[in-house]
Each structure stands twice: as structure tokens, then as C-alpha cells.
Length: 238
Image 1 (cartoon, one colour):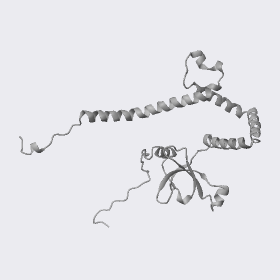
Image 2: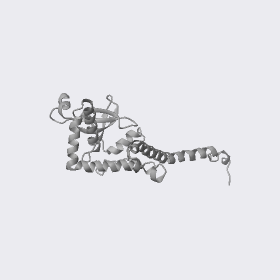
Image 3: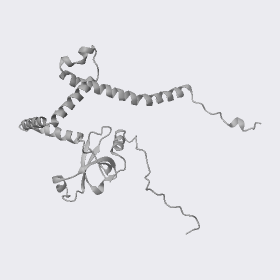
Image 4: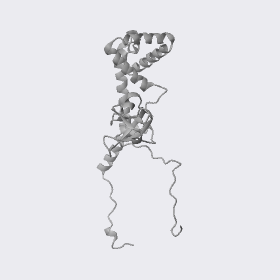
């Protein structure tokens, strides 16, 4: 049975061919882009390592001499083998003696010793296995009040820095690294009183993803088991 109002209901709108193709294209980009960029990065990184390592390898050990083709990425294996060998030798008594002797020679060179000391401190900080690079992710008001930035708490300020800032005894001054987007390896080292630093529950890795993605990737919001909802009150009861 039909009614006079049936003619007034418009038929459902179906997307056209161009809209469907555009949607499929965008979906394909979302799938291909992460895979393609990952492969490109690994391929470029392997070529960059090869360009530095392979010229240092003797000609008789070059794999191209035996295989006949240039194997991209083989320089990484040479680098790993050489690094492990140097680390194994450095752990021994003779290796430690050689390192101390070499460092004593470097300390006599005015410019070289400054560069070597700085690089050594950075390497020991980044690659130390017994310590973490950053303790907690945090929020601080930077560059002015009312504007918030993501930061990483590294250590408590000590020595002259804490004393000059008016915190000589109570370890109340924190050093905070504020990274830049989208390259979190560059940023600013700032010192804040502990009361001005808001520690976050998210991990350092999640906070780094948030910075790299320019706020597009947020960690999953998980409620704590200790959180309780406020009790409901019934109307008419005290």
C-alpha cells in the first residue's frame, strides 16, 4: 500500500565511481606508506653504513670479489663483528691497559681531548646498560605560563647548577629535556623546581611517539583499577 508521502522520501545516495576510487586510493596509501617508508629507511641506512665501512675492509675480504655482485647491507655485519671484537678485547686486562695508554695520549692534545671527552660522555650516557636515559615523561609550562610542553625528566640537578639556582641541599631541582617535533633528538635542557613538573603516567616511549607524531598518536587511555566512580544518590533519600 502506498501513501502520498512516499514520493517525498529521496532515495539513498550512493557514492559515485570517482568517490569509491578515491576512498580505495587513500586506504591503499595508509597501508603502503608505513611499509614503504620502513623499507626505504632500512635500505638507505644499510647503504650509508656500507659507504663508511666497506672502504676500510681489505680487498680480499670484500664479498663482491667472491659473489660478483654488491650485497647491500654487508657492511653492517662487518661493523657488528668489529664492534663485538673490540668490546671483547677492551674487557680484558691488556685491552684496558691499551685504552688507558691511548686516553693518556689524547689528553695531551688540546683540541682533540675536548672532542673525545664530549663524545665519550655522550656514548656512555646513551649506551649505558645499567641506567635509563630518561626516568619519566612529564609536562611543564614552557615557554611561558599557560602553554604546556612534553618533557623527559633525566636527573636531579646537583653541584654548582643546583647551588646557583637556590637548591643546594634538598634535590628539589630537576633537569628536564624538552624535545622538538618531529625530531626528538634535538631540544632544550631546562631546569625546573620539582613542584612545577607534572609527571605523567604514560611511558617514555608513548610520550616520544606523541612528540614525533606532532600530537596525532596518543597512548591508549587505561583507567586505573584504583579509580572509583562517585557514589550515586537516590532522590528522596538523605
